[in-house]
Amino acid sequence: MYFDGKTLLINDFRDLSIYGSKSKGWKSPIQDKGHLKELQVFADYVHERCEPPISLDSMVEVTKISIAATGNWENLSTQEV
Image (tube, rainbow, N blue to C red):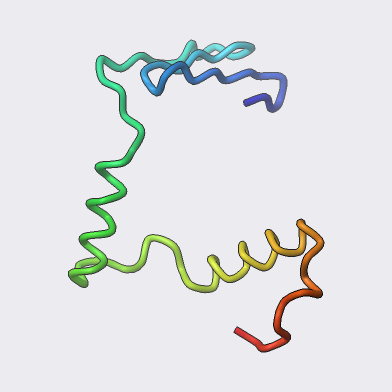
């Protein structure tokens, strides 16, 4: 990722190198892609122990933007969500 004159490089989900910053990044002894945490949050939501991790409004908005970006908006039903 590149922003504000800095470059961040993730290598195999084990380490993060930062160039153009005082911080040099971090290293992890294990590979963590976040799958276990994702399943834990989903299970908590299903068992009504927490709010949904992503709101319905947010999902609808992202879907609309994605469809608009493809140029296929006119092929969809005009029914409101």
